[in-house]
Amino acid sequence: MTRMEEQLLSALEGLQSDYERQHREWQTASEALRTMFERTLAENAALQQRVEHLSGQVTRLSEVLGR
Image 1 (cartoon, helix red, strand yellow):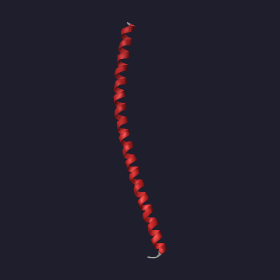
Image 2 (spheres, rainbow, N blue to C red):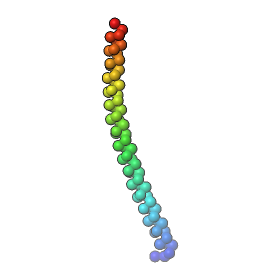
Image 3 (cartoon, helix red, strand yellow):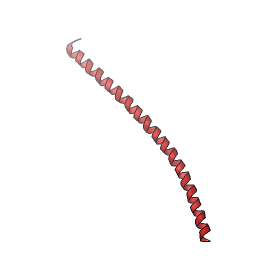
Image 4 (cartoon, one colour):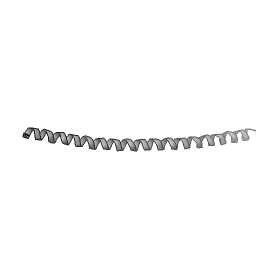
C-alpha cells in the first residue's frame, strides 16, 4: 500500500470513527428527549386533571355564593 493510500485509509477510518461517535451521541440525546417528552405528557395530563377539578370547585362555589 502506498503512503497516499495509507493516509487516505487513515483519514477514512478517522471519519468513520467520528461518525459512529456522533451517531451514538445523537441516539443518546434522542432517547433523553423522548423520555423528557413522555414525562412532560404525563405531568401535563395530571395538571389538566387538577385544573379541571379546581375549575369544578370554583364553579360550585360560585353557584353557592350566587344563591
